[in-house]
Length: 164
Image (cartoon, rainbow, N blue to C red):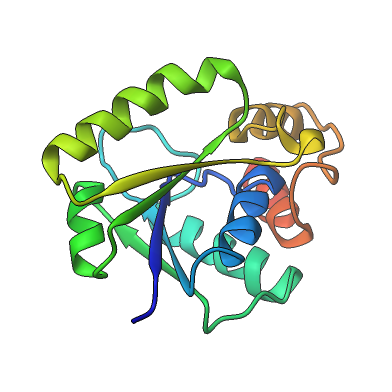
């Protein structure tokens, strides 16, 4: 039986920090489902469809990752429901800094209360990517700064197109 992990997030936009988590998780699991949240109460720069396209381009066009091992989907449900849909009992979460831990710890606890069969696994991105956040990437590109150290070429193009 294959081991499937769910990696939920907003990915608005995807960064090298997210990509680090995906690459590391590919060493641990047979398949990764990248769940792009389309929760309506958040203020996104990109629509759900745009974010799915950006993630697909970053992973498969820019980085040439294995399409058979990664599936990118949109979801507007509880993450535990997404786990059920894809027959997974693993949620992946990335940690950048200690400040992330309290929120992520609470989230993992709530998911565990919703479904006691689900485990949350925390992965850290490499040191050089731990400071990257989608929020900072958007701010830098908005102010016409260089973001090539933070995300892929196609993602940079999508960001520049949005702000020009």
